[in-house]
Length: 390
Image (cartoon, rainbow, N blue to C red; front, side, top):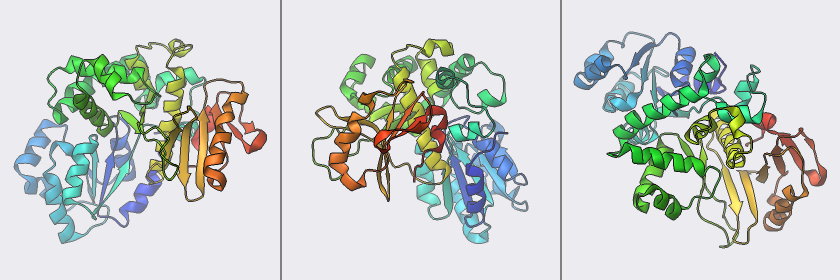
């Protein structure tokens, strides 16, 4: 098992909170992590139809089976959300910290159920697929950027010798047929799959709802609904623009990224790592890799991501702004190996806007990690897992 950074924080939370909830994409390692951190807890999966039926028909009997044990892990709790109401009663009666550990793959359903029943009684931990730092800890980072983008970060691809193109095709089919049907009443799944592929083709771009809905053959209301679904099931990240206290000249639409680049590559029909070389989406895929990894760094430390992008109406753009108590740190992401003077130009424009609040600029690219002039730090993409997100 590749060590997960979240494990240390989960152990601390279990000492002070009655329940822990692990949420994140399917196959991101939630079950493996829960069972590793809590090896003495009983385990039950609600993917099992017999267990699901028992939990639905007799919730009290379901919990009674495990009341004498050291704890209980309930996998994919969104299948039987009524369990959370009974869990609330048990928590209030017995108050055993760390006793309940639940997992869920559907943010929308799980968060809604938790907010209604377990607010103040449960700590929610978001677990994405492996971060660059986690892969680097066991020397598992792929050799080239193209290999990294194509393979992605899902644990199963690193633990087992599974061809990524085959695994992602099955993952997409399973996701569309199971999660999508469970959350949304979508009758034309082929149309939704087309929409999903069109999103992959726009990775790293500012979201244009009108264009996306037109190409997909759906109305804008449906497009927004489906984007919300993709976000709720941890498929995409909608990176919001930064426009706090800087006037009204800035773009207001988010940029579209994928939580995992391997999934995006599969949707783009990239069958080999070599197919990424020279592909029009390579730059957007690299941005997606770094943005997603910054989200992982934040979630792994139990913090909400404070990441944004910047683009004004005259074309000045910055791929990332990381906001902290110390100011705003600009990060430019480039797929090239050679440092170019064009990379530096946006930093000067931002300096006139943010002044002393602008922190050390960083350029993530495919060249060597080293300092550069004007206090700019050059960081190779393989070292981007150590970017400071505080």
